[in-house]
Structures are given as C-alpha cells and as structure tokens.
Length: 311
View 1 (tube, rainbow, N blue to C red):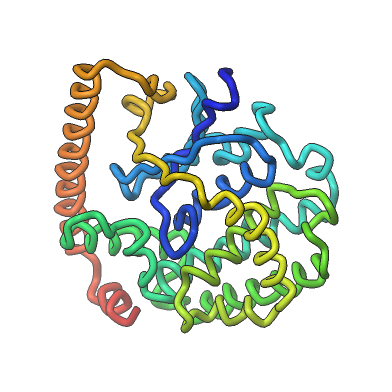
View 2: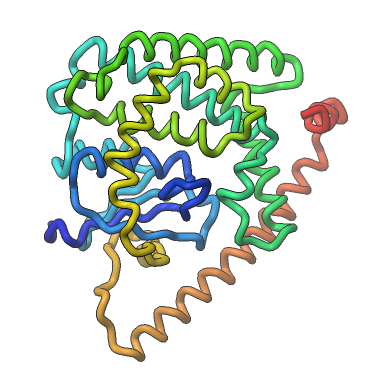
C-alpha cells in the first residue's frame, strides 16, 4: 500500500450541489470524509451505467463498488479505514443498518426510477450522452430497477404502499434514535452515518419537491438538522478545493491502480487514444444492447406493455 497522499476515490460527476450526485458514490465519499482519510476525488463519465463506480484506488490496490460488498465494506475488511470496529456487533447497529441499507435504499431506488419518473436519474447518469442512447439506457435501467424491486402490473400499487410505509417507519425510528445527537452512535461517526447522511442529502437536494419520500423525510426536523450540521462540517468545509480531474477506469478493469501522473508527452497521447477507443467501444456495445433490448421487449405481452405505459 502506497502513501495516503495517493488515495483516490473515483465517482460520477457532481450535480445538484453535491460533490457527486450518484447515490452509490456519495456514501463512499462521506465515509472517507468522516474518517478524516486524505484522498483525491476524481470523476469518470466513460461508462455511465457501470456497476464498478465508485471505486477507491491506491497504487495497485483497487476496491470496486460491485465487489466484496462495496467500497466501504472492502476498506473495512482490508483494514484501510474501519469506523465500525467497535460497533458492528451491537444489536442496535444491526437493526439500524437494516433500516438504512435495506428499507431506505429500496425506497430511494423506487423514487429515482419509478416514483419521480426518472427526472433526476437522466441528469445524474446520462446527460453527457446522445439523446437516443440516454433514453434507451434510462428505460433499460428503469426496467431493471422494477425487477429488483419486485414490481409487476398486479402488485405495483401494493408494493408502492409497502415501500413508503417502511420508509416512514424507518424515518420515525431513526429520528427517535438520533434525537439531537451529532451521530447515530452519540459522539462517534460510523458507516451508518455515511449511508444515512448520503440518503438525506440526496433525498432533499436531488429529488423534486413533488417526491413522496422527500415530504416524509421533511416531517422530521431533527433529521434535517443532523444532515445540515454534518454537511457543513465535513462537506462544505472542503468545497473550496480545485475541481477534481476526469479519470479513466483502471486498465481493462484488471484491478491495477491509476498510472503515474507525470508522463512523457508521447505516452499521454497513447493513453488518450486508448480512452477514445474505449469510448467508441462503449457506444458500439450500447447500440448492440439497444438492438437486443428492443428485440426482447418486442416479445413482451400486451399486458406488460400496458403496465409500462401506465407508469
């Protein structure tokens, strides 16, 4: 492991007044801020629907979002930074984690892709893509999100009520637990604070005012104060730093770290060529995905198609 000055977190771009508007990236960013671990922030827009983002790297070490339970769990497991070492065996920790990582995450996924009809999702993930590709990718991800949530034409209304009911209960329990404490566990931050703070900031700043989930959250003023205090201390205090650079994925996603920053001019040109090739390959792959997706959806029954229209 190299020096801490070489730690880099690569996320999706900033938006809506947040350092990164990606709901998967923001918890990792906040976790590192809560731990006071020095790191550089970089952005990657090459593969907008990649499951690897966010990822954390240091030299040859890389922790991806879609491996080993995600970036935060990987950093804890590998001993890089673990805010939960004295907490994760507590019954309260386990129950709070279920509320935040399960119930609230499910509600947020529903709001992003279904409840608000993707108003925010398009800007977060696809604003840099051609209109046709962005629309197809959006409908593809919406379809996948509905599958993950177990939504069908028959149970859509019942599932929606259950999702919002659980979210309301989670907010109530977390509001009671928090009171006027600085963190969920009195005076010490944890990964649950990172997930919960990320959820609150995203819900308030990214979701539209018509959002049902947003209105339920705003009923609990102490949760809003909690988020405002931590945002001011851990996020806004460092917002005056220079804009992070764009960042390409580690070569072939092989788990290798980023290249050294100082390179000969010819080497940089070669890297740019590889980057452009990856971009062209991505567009070609997405076009093929569109063809396959349309072919598959063409065989869906008329009832299913009516359900999609109703949403």
